[in-house]
Image 1 (cartoon, rainbow, N blue to C red):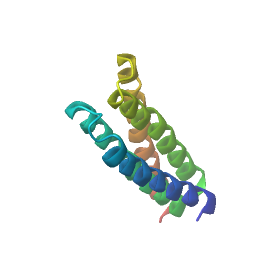
Image 2 (image 1 turned 90 degrees about the horizontal axis):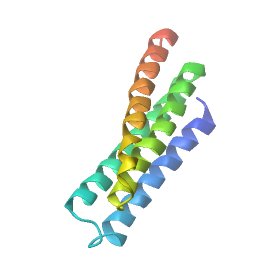
Image 3 (image 1 turned 180 degrees about the vertical axis):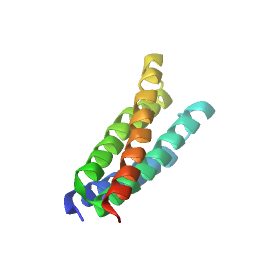
Image 4 (image 1 turned 90 degrees about the vertical axis):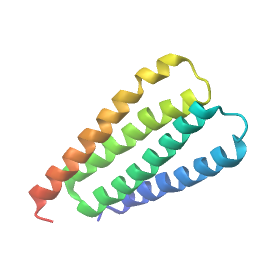
Length: 120
């Protein structure tokens, strides 16, 4: 197992919990219904992909590390753009989300290929 990659996944999970708590308490009353939904989606995807980074660490190898990097990139692009939109950022942030989603998708495919290739 790649310890640093696993630790990174744990830190992303902690970030998801912290940002989720901030959203629930610090942003309550500040976000409209659409903003609340965008923020929740961002937090959910951040947590899912934090776990993905941890799975990639368990898988080990270069392909799995590439998947972890794609999950991190997707977290920044997808989750970050949704959170920005929730907080009333300019609409062009919405164009960034699909790039993050594509990073997530490719990351999962790379992780699957890595698992099949390694025999684990």
